[in-house]
Length: 125
Image (cartoon, rainbow, N blue to C red; front, side, top):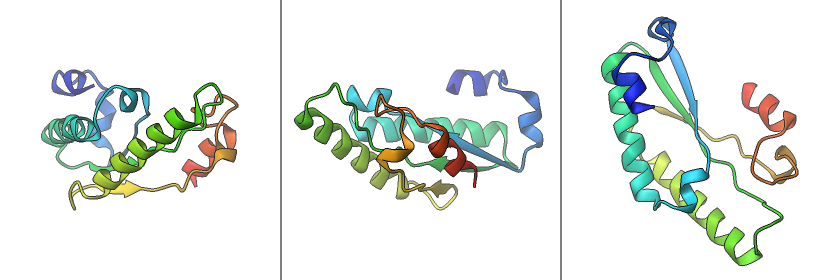
């Protein structure tokens, strides 16, 4: 995404938006430390702000996972990593807004990872 922003390959009408909400997932949380993920996110935000200086950025906190195929111990570790990431996300900068949706298990699909219609509708409120 950072490369797409630098090359202005993201929808050009984005430059006319007053606000952009970035919703990120948990794929990298399982293989990347939260500090590295936050560093990468900072780079993405900086690049975005350079190319879209008049657009206010908001980022959604990551929801916990309840993957029924993972062992409880591994699931607990992943959710601790998600909590750690979200905590660091709240400390990023005053220049962006953090949207904490207070996700619950009932807002996730049966896979325990992806938002269901309740989670998506909740985000749009």
